[in-house]
Length: 404
Image (cartoon, rainbow, N blue to C red; front, side):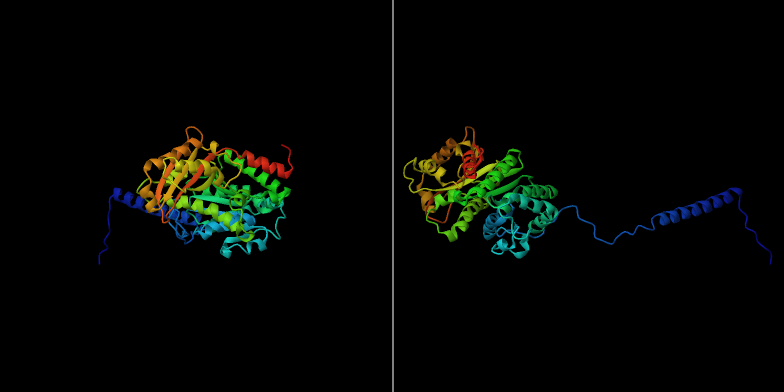
């Protein structure tokens, strides 16, 4: 059988040689790439999503803002617990003594003991303990509060060692957490319980020092609002209150008024609405105080304004603050159906005007009128932008034995 030869042109031979070289070269490149990356093992894990998801922590009501409360010390933990009793679920408590946490009505997972036996009224000791566990504190707040909320409140008793010593440190930690989660604000709220004068010199000194420090943070724009719960004032408002329910009543008073404003901003009104942005203006104003003024009569055009003028200063929860230094207020009037049917609108306008005259010139008063389920009339106020509580600081300085 004859042998057949395959002939091809010179150009065809060059093309085949070129293809062979390219194929071999690419094979070498791929082999080199595989060899270079052979030690990189990509883990088989799901990729994170672009957005932060909520962890499922929900309050038991509809409100304008999702607030978190961390109570430090026995007094601060009681304040935080009063918010938990209203249905706020982003609540935790910190103490340096396990026995003080035992009586706090929160889930055990939301209580954190950072010491052994308490601080003994020594703020320096408590501050040192928390400073050594700063990262643990951050992790605990993140776990208890979740990833979606609007503002953290630090609740502290100013007279005790743990509360006075850790309040400012917790503000720093809360600011850091809010920054990391891109919260709507970096400002942290503080609810500070001031002691009664009868609690003595050491307690007054602790309270003076922590109030002075926190006021400095208000002036720098890091703390807002600062809410003072003055137990001396509560004693004068409820002089017949027995020892056992005193603290619960004091804490429930401030938490209930705060809660009223936070929930009423999502309620509709046939008359005038106090909305979410109105409340935010007050919250962002620095030192604020709450009050409630019951109105016994309203037949005359000036009856309600007189009640506001004569009773508001006596009924606010903070002693030693000057209402006339405020520059913003939320004023909510709630009356029963029969009451609001009977009162002319001009009578209520007089009350709002009276509030304006009690504040600094050029102040803003956000108003709301709502129908309530009780057959009475009450004026609720949240006054903000207040000046330094000079009278209260002077009182604490005197009791603490500090020079004027």
